[in-house]
Image 1 (cartoon, rainbow, N blue to C red):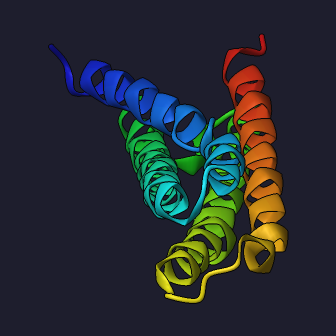
Image 2: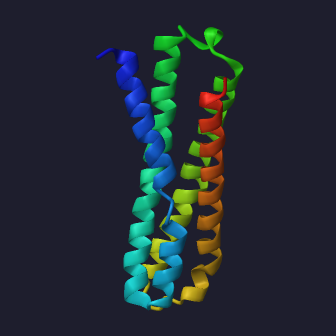
Length: 150
């Protein structure tokens, strides 16, 4: 199997992590918040792991994409414009993942572990998780369309 073929397979695997990782994070937080503090601690931990999967996916997509750029196209000069746009979207997704999604999930996990935890104190953060997950999904969808646009 050639290096470009391996990179494409890894690229697709990482793209599924990028999309699937945060898919149910906001719903998990919402459902476990209603079930009580112990359930919310477990739900927050699970949502945090989902966020980690999304971050790993975005980093993997970016790295394998850059690898493909240099192995298939010989560098940035031979790259179609739509791939430049998709690469930019992957960079934006990394910024959202590292700058917003993971820190927000981390703050929820920390708050949930506090002995005097009040679910209302993280309601805004839970909405942010949903928002950042939705933005990530939109970026993923647009990048997917760009990868297969003719």
